[in-house]
Image 1: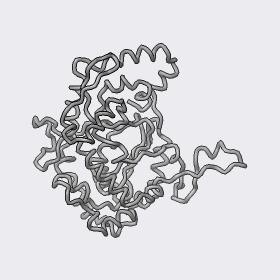
Image 2: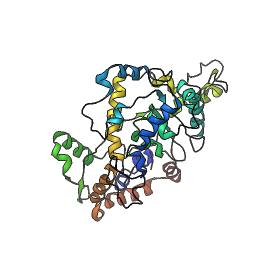
Image 3: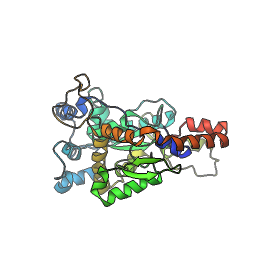
Image 4: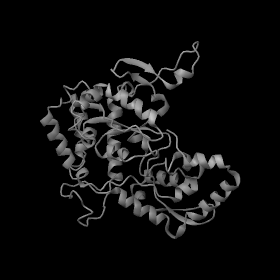
Length: 359
């Protein structure tokens, strides 16, 4: 599903259920990958945050401030998310494929020549992405074969702030997916009363069909960055990591025009303040809990499904709630009416646009 689909068919989009990518690997939620990362970092003697040339100054400032480096209100099962040392500004490992191949190529080249890339590449054979994510402040997430990818959610589970470089990617359980008036009213009611989040609000659609609407639990701007992908398609470095600053639009510019200055993701991330990182990381904790298929607990097996343990995390509970909203086909009449109207007004080119996505 894409942002364009939600804009073109809002009622039908609301009828659908958008879920996070399934992750039932118990090692993400029982602390195994956290322990692996700590042990691997020590074994390889990777520099810690105070010695790392790839660490953000904002991270160093938070480490120096004991009151900012951890949260006393965090529960034992989630405290790792707020207290992990982050010696890498970013960690990037996406391949060069899909509709956003140029963006991925440029991100990869610029990352490889950044301090983060140089440090991570020294240990590339031993450090997997689940380890790198746990030691990075930000995780770039470009579009590929589709606007979304599993890395968007794995980044959150590792405490890494996602950097969305995909126009059409939509976060589940946010207003990006459902910005209907009834949903907004439910969210407002939830803000006024804690008990409102525990009950359903009754509203009426235009066709007088009674439906049950639950509040929007997340705001995407509270846990992730979203950037214009086209602004980061410039190439800052050559093959030997010398600065070249080349942008696709430069070739089409006349000699009398000043070519646009391409943006470097590393340089942009270095401008983000400690307070903003702390805000996003706190939001990432809430998002991770809601997008998890299993609750974090040390006794969770590595393969819980094989042992007959059904998902009990936030994503599973959200699914049950959304299914109840759609009971008896309550949301279908509005979608059917919308489809009929769109089919009468739309042309084939618009249908093609809805089925594609923008980087």
